[in-house]
Picture (tube, rainbow, N blue to C red):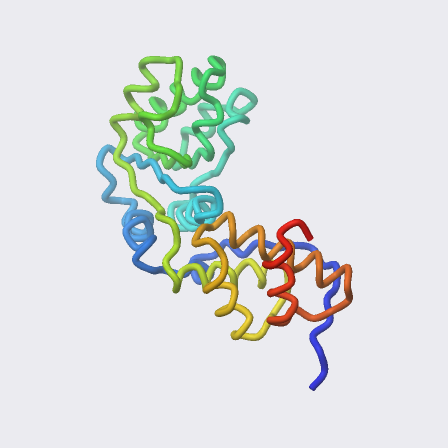
Length: 224
């Protein structure tokens, strides 16, 4: 049987709803996104660790609601009234904590979006009461916003995440490689992303296919 060859191809992240695997670790968050028209006060905070799928679900929501997506650190350069004219998703809220102009921009976006009768989704790695916001009115509004959480993956979700990360890099290892990785790596999205990146790099540098043997070498040599 011919071996799978590795090529240095661009990473294209799949962000459609069909690409998002639902498991008990994320089912509640998915249901909240899909049922967005029933959000209390028309707003929601989506919480989850890095790599959990917050950006993916933000894109799913944008497709459902025709929302625009913006990074929180770009708010001071944005046209706030134009953004507030429709549903809007703001990513990585906690990264603007302590930056007063950006906090002011988010405060105005929050108020204007809701005043216009539109919906607001914000994403963050931690709950709102842990964001060191310096604008009290913004902090109170964010802490009063309903939230849903993407939890660390169970086995089924971890396997699905590994499969998706491989597919994003146009890699297709045998199912036995994926099950081996699921058993061996830390149960976190960050660990999955790291091992796929290292496997891809080693396969490229060695010209070898991604096999269980190569996976074992990567796991046994974390600095490789």
